[in-house]
Image 1 (spheres, one colour):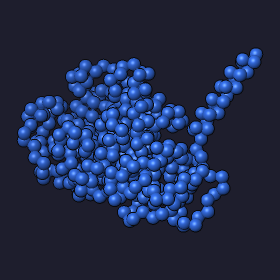
Image 2 (cartoon, helix red, strand yellow; image 1 turned 120 degrees about the vertical axis):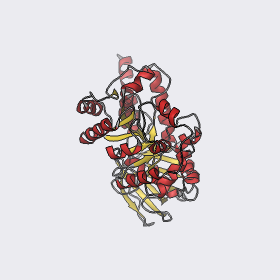
Image 3 (tube, helix red, strand yellow; image 1 turned 180 degrees about the vertical axis):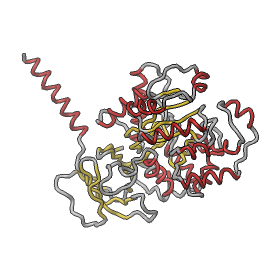
Image 4 (cartoon, one colour; image 1 turned 45 degrees about the vertical axis):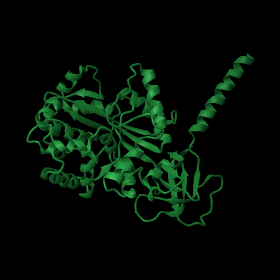
Length: 413
């Protein structure tokens, strides 16, 4: 009997410890230089009060009294900015076949992202069932992870046939002219997808049909900048909201495309230009329709695709919104999103402030959460990053992390 009572008390203690770890304390971040992402002015010293996971006040009065009973972070000499957002990741595409082993791999990646300053991610092609589990565990603070928003993945039959892919579900669907698009989108939404990624082997007519139904059902319309046989302007006219991979914009200069990327490369390889009139028209239309370019410049740089930075620079100069995303997961100490920001500044003519916006408020817009995260203001979710040095002076200072705050929960580095 005594042993049963002891075990019960031990279990209760463990539950209490877990609940305490999940608790969102009332926190007062005192005397930080605040980079609110609204203005490129020098950051002003101020304080931020966080309660129940949200920002309840932002004050620039240095004599603001500290509320009684709060946890205080003395941020004097430090810089407070919104948490970073990686708008292009694939956290469940490891080589592990076993569900539990793949889950561990994914959890390790997510932990690395969070500790590297990333508080939200947009996963644009992965295993939907696992992503849903990870999303739920992240929201309950059962794992150390950014908030997760993920896509369903749609491609034409020829894409899957070449890869001998047969494992379809609500988040991995094969689509063609015979597809019931209303039913396909409903399945994706029920599976927890925030958006649908239109990937490959889809013609312009089907692309428009899929995009229209996705919008009708409240799903984000995401996809490759070139879906083949649909070209970039086809994607723009279809209503795509986020177009991935700047280097893929080169296909707009081609008279026509087939469904096969290999065939298209055979036909046009060596004929591409990095400056062509169709590109200007494309960027003008993207700006007009408020379409975001998910540039993935770091991915382009490590794969020798120099056109990624060239096109991103021009898009930015013409006023197209650019989000920061990596599409590149590795084993270095910090997430590659920091490298993405450096490339935007060093190779694409972004100011540090503009680069930071690409990884905060603009990245949040890719999954339509810009009213919840991405700036420091009253009422927004308390996803914050406290840095030891000023990223507006040197973009590499995003790596100089003191504390990560996700929904009011602190992770001191």
